[in-house]
Image (cartoon, rainbow, N blue to C red; front, side):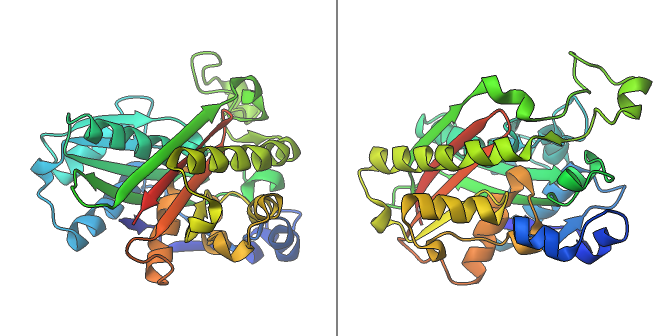
Length: 318
């Protein structure tokens, strides 16, 4: 595991200078104090490559031994080719197949479960999941309801075939496509291509109905957590740490309250990074490891909810 965030930090105090908002307003409603912002010449692929290189420095693996690269992202470098292709070329993984995965904030969970399935099938041995996001490039920086919520960052996870007891024990995922337009980017695809009009109306930026997202997120988090626990035949008491997607600390606290689970069992680092979408769980895992909150043989539950609506959970024995 490894992660990377850009050097530039944008605090809530910085946003006070350009938006009708305050540090107190943002922090009270989201738990966010700062976020990292990529440079103009630093696309999502570059963030991902930095995370991969850090991972390979810590856990040496020859690039040519990587069989598959999956890049979950909702901010790809371009429509095509896949950002995974660009990552592959940059790290020299010439034998790897590549593809991007679009599931927004749930992307890491979907990619992790997909990677595990490929390995369990015997088709691949080493799969690299590179979750990378440059949300600063798709925000309307005049909209205080969305601009304050997101940040840029990346994580890299190497999954490999193993005979020991560690690894993924159970998975769950789901979607409610009927609520797509509660969190989406209206223009930029084939349904509404980019035009002068769509740019002027800022339709290629994130649009969100925050109250609806909150109302849907809490029960879906509970549902997917309960389903993955049932699949693994264990209880919430067996879990050492829950690492949720870092969307909003109020959502995390509401899920803990709804499930009657101590809040300290839910890991959160949103204060320092804001919502980095598909990259957030990987970044959180790296931070949790650094803080000694994950130990060998711990059961760690990863869970996410995002645009689509999509959701999912993965139970891991560390």
